[in-house]
Every structure is written in structure tokens, then in C-alpha cells.
Length: 114
Image (cartoon, rainbow, N blue to C red; front, side, top):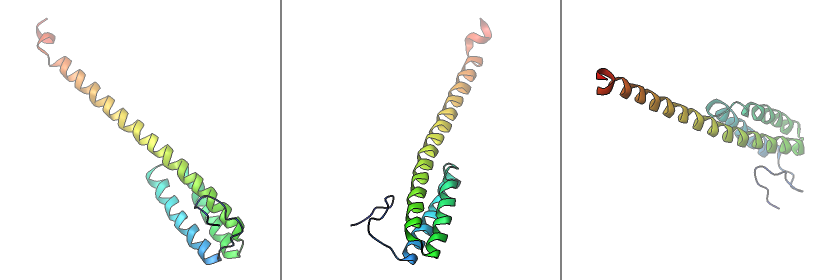
């Protein structure tokens, strides 16, 4: 039975080297997401690092479980990071509109002569 990235393998024992490679790629993704999007990916960095160590020791089932959990934290960080960026962009747009309104009010003809 084939497995996806975020599901535990069923009756599919993977090679330690293959699991190490997967955990290392998940670790790289976690670092990038933590830096660019949202810091909850730090939990994914920790889980991926522990997963690499478990795969080194030959505990493939535990490494696969940690790999799947790391994927969940990456998804959470991506969602929260996107929400964070949208809020920041909306705040900047609001400030630009506010500054434009204040500028138009002070430079209007009515302000000086009435």
C-alpha cells in the first residue's frame, strides 16, 4: 500500500537511509517556513531532527510518526504565516488610505478659506 507524506506507513518498513532523507528534506522545509512564514515551524524542526536520530538508530516506525507530525506543524505554520502577511498588508493599506485622507483634508481649498 502506498503512503502519502503525512500518513504513517502501513506494513511498509522503509530503509533507514530513505527515512533519513525524508526527515532531512522535512527539516530543510521546516527551517525555511520558520524563517519566512511563522515560528510555529520550530516544533517541526525539532520533530524532524529527532526523526533523523530515530532513523539513524533504526527505529523507522517512530521516525515515520515524527515525520508525519512535522508535516502537520509545517502546514499550520504556512496557514498562520499567510494570515499574518494578509493582516500586515491590510494594515499597510489602511495606513496609506488614512495618510491620503489627512493629506487631502489639509490641502483642500475649504480648509484655508472657510
